[in-house]
Image 1: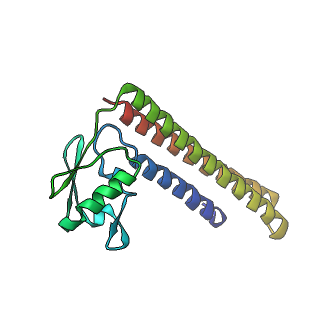
Image 2 (image 1 turned 60 degrees about the vertical axis):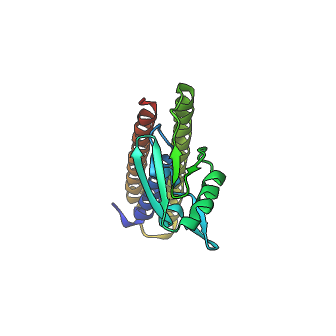
Image 3 (image 1 turned 135 degrees about the vertical axis):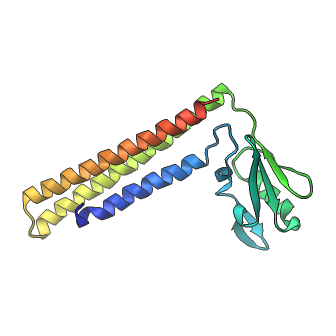
Length: 184
C-alpha cells in the first residue's frame, strides 16, 4: 500500500470500527453488557462510565446485573439508565440493579434489522466520501508533484480496491448483525 493512501485506509478502518461499536449497542434479544457502554453515571460530580462504578454480569441470557462497588451509587446508576435510550427499566433490590430484557417481537426484530441496514448504508456513504476525498487529493498531487499519470491511475486503482474491500466488510457486518437479530 502506497504511503499516500495510508490516511484513507485508516479513515475507512475507523468507519468500520465505529459501525461495529454502534452494532454492539443494538440488542438482539440476548443481554449484552456492551449496550451499557455509552451510559455515564454521575460519580461525585464526574461523569463516569457505568463499567467503572460497578461489576456487570450476565447471569442469564436475558438479564444483566450491576453490582455497584459503592452502595450509595445505586440511585445514580438507576437514574443514568432511566435517562439513557436503552428502553429498559432497572429494578433495584438495595444491593444491585437488574436489567431484564424482554423477548423481542417479530416486528421489533424487523425494525432493528432495518436500523442495522440504515447504519450500514450510512457507513458505506462515509467510505465513498473518503474515496472521493482521496481521489481529489490524488488529482491535486498530479498538479504539484513530479508524478506521472500512470502512477496517479495506479493509486486511484489501489484506492478503489481499498474502497471495495471496506464496503464488502461492511456488508458482512450488516449480514452478521441482521442474522443475530433474527435468530430467535
